[in-house]
Length: 167
Ligand code: PNS
Image (tube, rainbow, N blue to C red):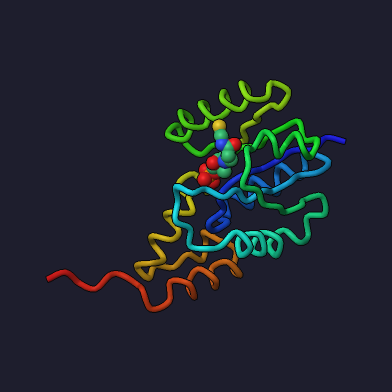
């Protein structure tokens, strides 16, 4: 059984992430989508909320399992018997950091391979942080995230919306 791990912060899950999950789920027998804790970021959603978002969005993908971890990615993969880490690549700007992470993961655990999947053209510019930023100014995020997640982001931003005119 070919198992893979798709890790990320997913704060929140975007249509770009969903595209990678859907395509990767066709390439592997089992795909773990894993929300990793990252102390350097101050997230909009708790890990439990992010897990629920992904579970709800991916409920029709039978071989996708949502999980979370606060440990090392390669240790998670090994613990699950997954030989592949799937990463989405958007633009050249992603490459440098992703390349370093892939090499570090290889150093830590040579048995686990990182495989990059090119993002679909329509999602090239999309990131969780841009979704939060534009939504915080009141712009529509309809085409950027699944509908249930749009609702959660808009509710979370609620009254703290930016964009009062500078004088
Ligand atoms: O969505 P993100 O924030 O780009 O995802 C980053 C993530 C979760 C893939 C990365 O921070 C990670 O792998 N975290 C797990 C801890 C770890 O293994 N760190 C060493 C990476 S070389």
